[in-house]
Image 1 (spheres, helix red, strand yellow):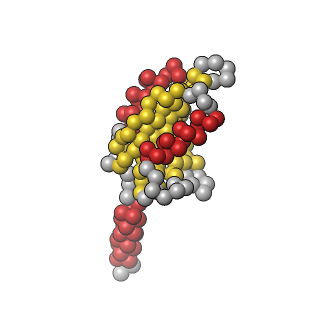
Image 2: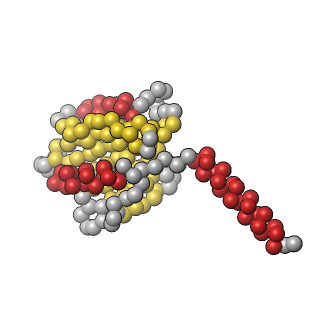
Image 3: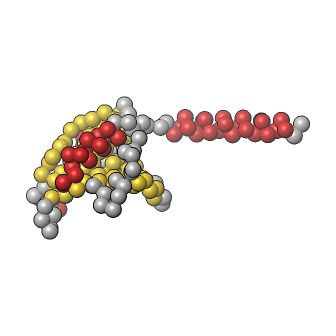
Length: 162
């Protein structure tokens, strides 16, 4: 994915790896976390993952407003986008979003998005453009390519010793 110019990117490693992106500057208008998700039940889809998220969120915040709930295609895979307006305790509204992209059987990439209400229209257009550039990498092909390069490198180095 091509990130917007000026985006700050941080990688968090642990049992899983997450990528944290935020708009540059002292008061970022948006933040996004990209992480993997293994479904807790078989046969789920991006749409059902978003529906479950919405149901769970409604139990915590019954006054939320669904701003967008739409299917998408990202990098040739089924995806689903959900944006919610959430009343804030101190007044006003916060925007939270989730984009779930199918990444294999019962495996998903999840983009969790937070946006300042005043920045939503601008940030949404910016993030839509960035998400449209996302590509899936076939990790099995990547591993094969790396193995091939390593063996070629070993052959090359072996030729220097002769």
